[in-house]
Length: 150
Image (cartoon, rainbow, N blue to C red; front, side, top):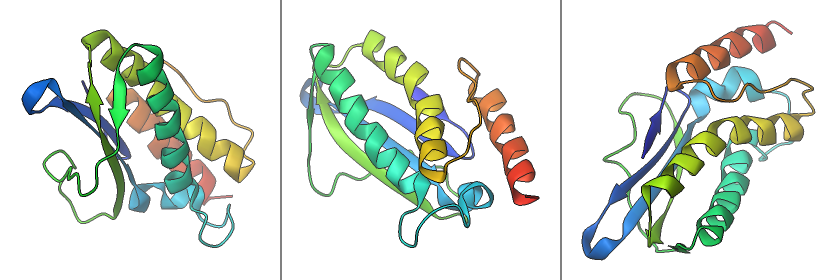
């Protein structure tokens, strides 16, 4: 499973022994026009949103008969888009992963991340669902322009 755009990524790749690695990240540089000045010091909504979202994703994994495993020093550099921007990333292992589980996560994660960010920033904006990676990326670029002018 792979969902990647300039603002975020959610990727699940196979490892050895039937395990899969879940990697997720938010581009703090790209989200800056959306988040700046709309949160308390040290409470970046993109970071907090991804942390909370990943707890929800762990629950989805368990509900679907798989199991997440926290492992220290799990690296996702091989999946992170390479550029000069600052990224916050998280990862964990998944046991008993299925493609249908990956599709559920792919449909849920992008819009839910933005919804969580909006709640934290007290932004009353509806979040589109079901957009492709490129369409959702354009939505976020348009939102960045709109919010940077406020």
